[in-house]
View 1 (cartoon, rainbow, N blue to C red):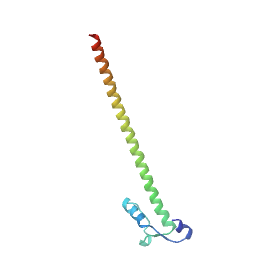
View 2: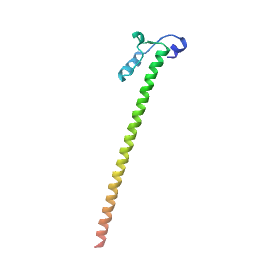
View 3: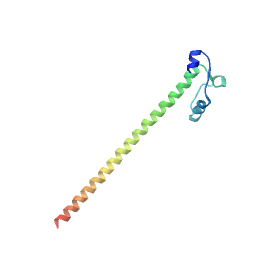
View 4: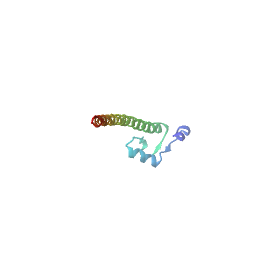
Length: 99
């Protein structure tokens, strides 16, 4: 992109990058039906990549909220179970010492 920007010419999009875009369903500039891109075409490609990055970030944040909720529920259940066990022990101790 920098070569296209500073040299005011087209540069080739590497095959690995094309494959990355294809694998993830990202859009890229197909003007001229080739892999040569000028500054504006590179700007479009990079914006597509930025949008993809933001969508991953949003999905990750949503999954983190779900995970935190699950951990909270788990902690609540284990605390409840622990309280029940403690109460059971106290009851058994009271019964055992009353004899």
